[in-house]
Image (cartoon, rainbow, N blue to C red; front, side, top):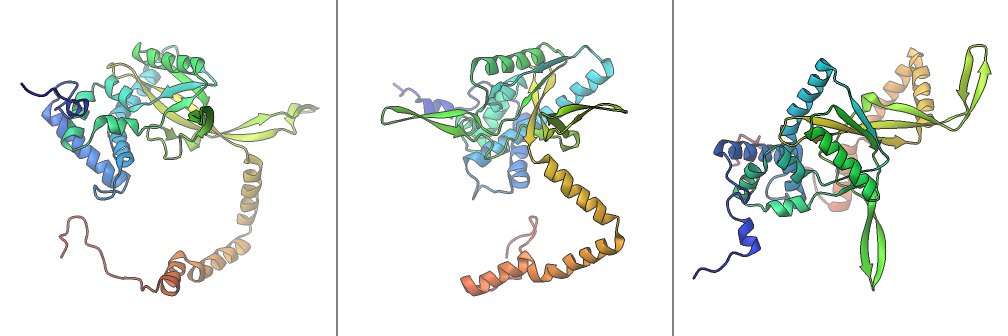
Length: 316
């Protein structure tokens, strides 16, 4: 009588969730290796589980982008009534598995990851939980976005890109200990920064009546930088957008510095003088020279000028 499969053995079976087309699997494997090499600049000798997760996430994201762009083009052409869902909380959770299911890629991804000698569940566990909320209301907002995309509604979510998510909980000596959830420390492969749409936002201040009308003065200004995240519907090729804003509080210092640069640029003589000064100082303070000196004096090593062969050349 054969021995029953363990959970680990079951996971190693070919495509746990179903059969996948050979051409899809081969395509995913090529994209996975491309992202591992050219996006993460790693190879199998030095890559770890998190690197493999990012390679897989970027591979799945490739299948999102075309649908995302086509969806927005369709909305602009048809001009449907739009829904703007504004919330202080969006408890989106993990994105990888949800996206594979919605795009019908889970079978092919399972098979590709298996053929690459990796464990899908281990890679899925590497994803940080985007817990941008305290629970119920944030999760409800996330479900609304998923539902509206699956129903084909032209919907957009707007919120805040918190630097820290809901706290991590640990039990130490029988007591609950809360730690900050630094969910962005390794980056987020699903979002796209949109610095061209950065906007100043004013707080506090007062109104002042002038001959030109009422003005809002003595305000505290912060910068809001939007990050767009795709929200795919369930197997309908609809991908809506969630836009979260990162807040920068040093806007006034940035403006003052930029004004100083602009004024200096108007004086060609002074500007040219400073440019020449900087170029002349590069040789003295360049990082190459500093590292070379450090190598000689601290490590007792000489820099090597030997060239490494190109990827398509054979090593001697």
